[in-house]
Image 1 (tube, rainbow, N blue to C red):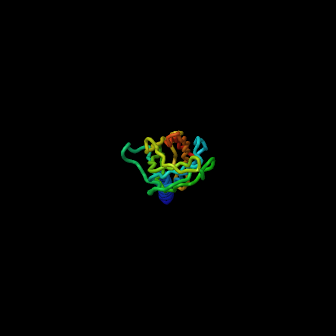
Image 2 (cartoon, helix red, strand yellow):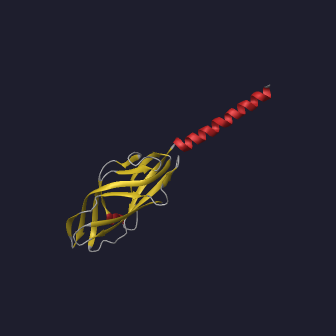
Image 3 (cartoon, rainbow, N blue to C red):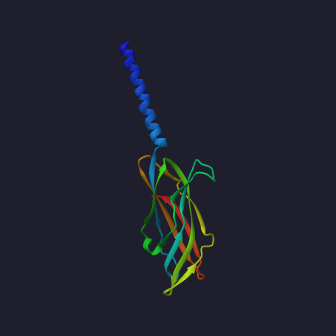
Length: 170
């Protein structure tokens, strides 16, 4: 009888451990770090500044209108000269473990420097929603994942900024 009780307790303990590990890995959280970079391809512009709004990321298993989580909840200016061929962290967020497939933000204002003069620039769409390459970024419990936004901008003669944006897990 003692042996049956010991086996029963061992089985219960194994089930509890496996359930805990499963729950931790599925419902635990990890950290997402968002970085931005910009290779120099601005034409006549020597400086490009953008004011972007809050940054949100979308959980892959959620509906299109739901499943959005805010990474950065305020607007901020970034001097793209400071991220030429390097990357700069623009936000961190603890997120539930899982796969995230889209990131979005708006560009509120832009300024370009041409010939030593600052000019107000425009971004035709103003809103950027970017599919994350390689099927998305996986947030793993207890780990930090890094997402790199590659904002390859082109400044046209009329001070329009045409962004070519990629988001890639790093």
